[in-house]
Amino acid sequence: MADTIRTTTSGASPFEFPTTVGTLIEAATQGNSAEGEKALGALCVLYRPCILAYFAIKTSNPALAKDLTQAFVVHWLARNPFTKFKIRKNSRFRCFVGRALKNFWIDYQASQHASIRNFGRVPESLEELKMSDGFEVEAEDPSPDPCMDWPWALQIHRCTLARLQAKRAGVGTVDHLELLLPFILREGDRESYAEIGKIIGAQANTVKQQVFRLRREYLDHFRCEVSQTTAREEIVEEMRYLMEILPEALAQESGQT
Image (cartoon, rainbow, N blue to C red; front, top):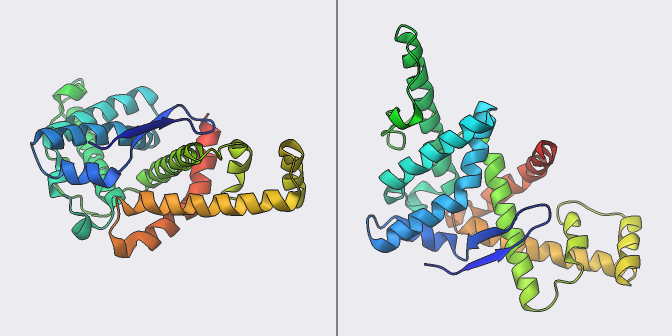
């Protein structure tokens, strides 16, 4: 099992992530070995925020979203769909998980509609729902649900920030990092850099250079995160897509807090 690093990103609770997500996915594909089961459990913890966010978007009901997340994770643990995932064949892990969530959601809706049709009978509890085929049955539309994409982009962003902060801390260059992070995804003006310069005792041009270097580091770590769950030939396109939707995802998240 890969070691873990615990750190705190701006505006977020402590986030723990495996140093190599790809290693966990690879271990989980091995089936019912002890290492595979540990890896599967770690993946459930890692991607639970994405799963919860997906169901929150779908239901607009926090309590139901939590119930569905728990049911999905239990199903995930019981069935281990990762034995069917191959990075070279499936290309993008985001799409793989998105399809699984989409099918699970379709099964849930079908079960609710069936309950309603059954002479007004009270719907079954989540524990009684028959969703055992949620990962194997393909929906009519095989594409992943776009509701998964915002949470996924946020997940990659948080892991990237955590890696960036951990690396900076390791070499003793974490000072003033929080002041510079807001400029990773947007261009600052001279006045903004001058204000930060007053705080850290540097000229505006020096702050701008620091932001430029920080942005390059961020992109390197972002690429590393994406490469662990995406086929090599798809990495550039996946990065482009996630970076494109990330500002909107961050704005959506900010509006909900």
